[in-house]
Image 1: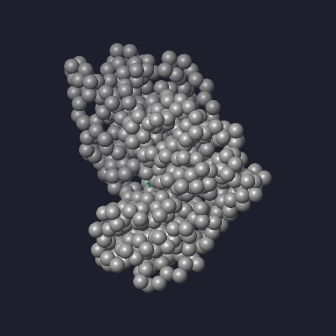
Image 2: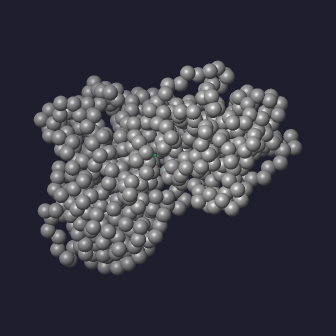
Image 3: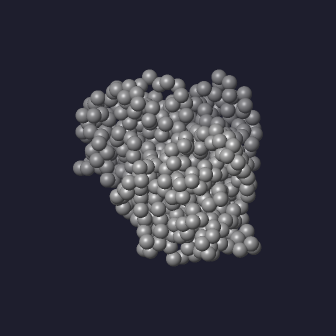
Length: 609
Ligand code: F6R
């Protein structure tokens, strides 16, 4: 998704904007640009490609010199990635950058064309620039013109704006798309996300829908949609510069895989009191849990896969029915939900458009919503009835790893608490499972150490494959879904996950010696059955990589490669098995020479449908 930044201060503005944009690169982008006040005139530099292309262009053609400006990384939606379509876009007196989508841009464009306005690009953003310029030409007052303009816009936007008549000032406004204002010493910032500004300041304001921020050398002012001043609460990010740097790792993804033990500790430890889960600070009490009728888990991608594990665990131990839905399906299938139902929304970013829409729909229908979110202050976090923050810290790699891991840990905490509230766990059992979960950080650390080398070896066997299959049963099937997604999104090798027992109903016809199969078999009750399925694919020539517990004896006629994980409480094994699945995906992508952290066509935070 696009990223926006802005700066007013004493440093070289172009350098600050580029540096801040590098911290938003993780969002995915295909062009970049900046606009800086240079001798009271707005000077624009923009380029298709990566930030280094912009930097090279500025080195060749001259870098805008000044102390106030705006910047942008664009993930193309309206119009191909090109220099012309890159932001910033301008009217006569107005230049702006935009994250989001303007749904009614066509009718606004028709109106502006009738007014004699000409357009250079295919973007919806240029329509906003021209519309704002149109109102500003009449009103001659920036904030009133912004209010007038935003009243006309439908869709989502976070805008960073400069007006040529108001040098050394940056204006910003948002609806739906995220926006923060960073508050430093004699310098202020705007950004789509905190990592962009953390090098300069940890203090920030969260800008609410339709609020307008004005940054100058004197400070920051915020107004509401009626031009009334708003007093904002200053927030402080509780992580530092290291959290958004690679710290010596070659990629964010491998750094984040290694951060998982600590991420789980940060997420789980504060929610355990006297050896038992305690989610009261998240407004979840045993009394409330006892009133739940059905549970729906709604999310996208990896977060939805964490929900799949949650379903198996909750149904198994708390005996409560759980439906897992893809958010983009849930929101349009007229779901039968209402009072007494609990809708759990899982989201790393807390801004995913479909998950947010699903949550709003659930609220409208009278259901209770519980959000499990990593990004502090995000829209989903703010709008949910109940909230459990995961404390993974910033996740920069597009391929989610540590966020998935902490989502799993919260699924367990929740399931244990629910099982106890519903009388399915007695206190002894609750304490036992809670202590096992508490020890997971050490176990994850052990698994990272034990499986890195073998995962690397396995990836050398996979890197030339055109397609592969992940199979498993029960929890292992839920995990396979995530293993398969992780591999395909960063290695670009086609892969599918399949319930092992379902193979022979069609998919087994795909099996040849050219299609490797990764079989996950960690659950004792299903082990024999999965082994039978493995034999079926083996008999058809597949090379099998089997992931199982270290006490399993696996003969050569079953698997070509065996990756063993420690024996532990079986229900918790997904938190261990996901590690080699992540590592296999990572090393396969590295060996294929791909851009691991920013895979093609993908954005970190999907704020459009
Ligand atoms: C894959 C991945 C995505 C996200 C999905 C939901 O590695 O990261 O599948 O899980 O886009 O994003 P959030 O969790 O931000 O709602």
